[in-house]
Length: 231
Image (tube, rainbow, N blue to C red; front, top):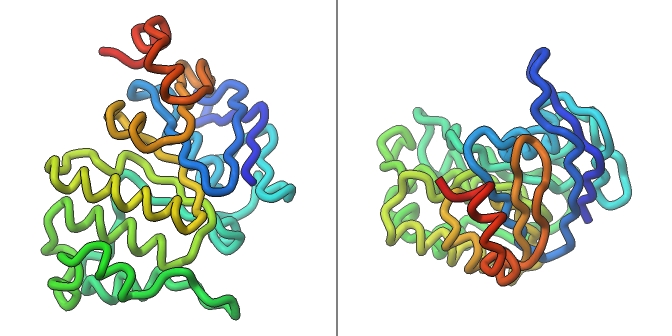
């Protein structure tokens, strides 16, 4: 579905990604793990066309490296940034409306789906998004991206700063995505949630993939955890 090969990315003269290679299959949840500054967010932004890169990114056997972000989104890739980027002066419902994709294809998701998944959003659907709590804004950002009906969704640190109950909701949300055949690239600091729900784990260090395997293999690999994940 998604294939990344020998991907390099730069911020000015700073070489951030050094030959990143991995793939994601349909309906697969892949956790992208690593310390801050390892290149995880840059990887997602480069795939999404927000950072210039060199190498190869194929989406369903079609090269997308160098295309505009809106074109990549229209092809079926969704992106939930770490800073959420809601529209604070618009209501919850208006924010969700902005996420809708206009096409002849029937969407897998409706407003009712979003409100059933997160009842708190239904309660606050007429509230301006700027008045939502951090957890509510995270729910809204996730749902707004889903309204675009992506086949792959890249989510950057969805549990950052959230209360444990909200973290559990996010985990349930990701499981529902898999049930509907949506692939997920999950960028996450919390190893527990990532290893519980993912089919495969990627570990990044110094802009490269240093581990690619199932969660059980990562649990048993003390060297990788110590060298690249533990503080």
